[in-house]
Image (cartoon, rainbow, N blue to C red; front, side, top):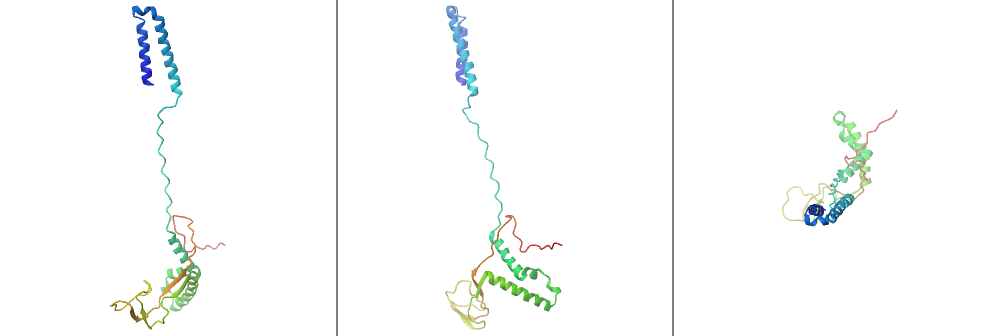
Length: 203
């Protein structure tokens, strides 16, 4: 557009200048007419170019960054708290552990421990199938085979040589054959659920 306008402007100036040349004054009317035609063309060109869209599109603004994702705690932490809540509900385990029992007599502690043991045992058997690792009676001599699953036996005392090992069964151990953890729903991704809600009696 700028180049075309420049050429047309130079042509108009040249045509107007030629009207002052004596040999061409006889054709001055034609020169003026040509100059006027070019001028009208420039006016028309300027008017149509103003309404036309720009050939170079303006750059789009950068897209806003996505909002940060909420921080979600590990669901296993909530499940562990849910299980602890079960022991609290059925056996008051957290109450018993968090209490200062130094102020109570042995008889009071023993009576409370009986209630806690009964409730926590019910909670344990509700969510875990628990069986002994070793079926032998404690105090008897047993043999730990070389192919025993890792973690099933803990060797204590003088350990020498290669398996199988033979020794006295001090503790039969425990293992879970199945687990049924309580379902935990995170109402707030930023915090863990309570073990037990605070109870408020309305009066």
